[in-house]
Image (cartoon, one colour):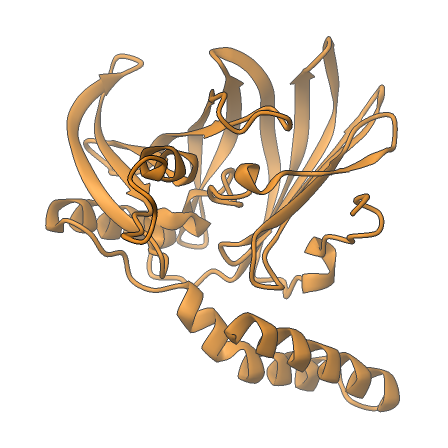
Length: 289
């Protein structure tokens, strides 16, 4: 219901903006914050789960943000894409809250775009490759964190529907890490399919044992035509830099089934720039629905 209410309020606010051109951007943005506050509160809550996991997660978010509240982020930089072949270009990665994200890769062979959107209540997504055809992402590929490239806006910081579990200390890439899992468990799920539904939503976080900064996150993606086939996806974060008290990973590497797919060297970071939700909207007609 909260999502539907927000959708209606957004329509009203857009109409007001169109009919009263004299309203300043600042007043419009304030109006949006006021009407969407209940929605944002419901989606972003302090982490819950077993006490040790919650403690580690809270300390990790504090280390990342330095107490700064982050509503949106834009990362830009250079990228190497190892899809059908090695390709290079520029990358722009945007996130609004924990549920909206957009990745644009301007490669020498063409543009690749991936959008995640939950404005209407249910998670949705679409992607476009170099052939310029827009394709719908199946729902089972929209259940993990949308902002996989920016740890401060993941479920490590808490989500209404998620729990955290501490899985212990282990070694990853010759470094000692604390292993946490963010997951969903619904007692209404039939027992026969509950493990599959939980696995599709799980996010595993690996925190440096000394600093508690995330060094990696892992989750499963699936072929568009087979939600039961798991493709292990791992994102590694390194070269953290302090930007006005916020620690941001300037190197992001994404692996699928152990093979490097994306290697992003971030050169610019913009926080809290009032990104518009329209940038993350999934268009059903263009997505072929």
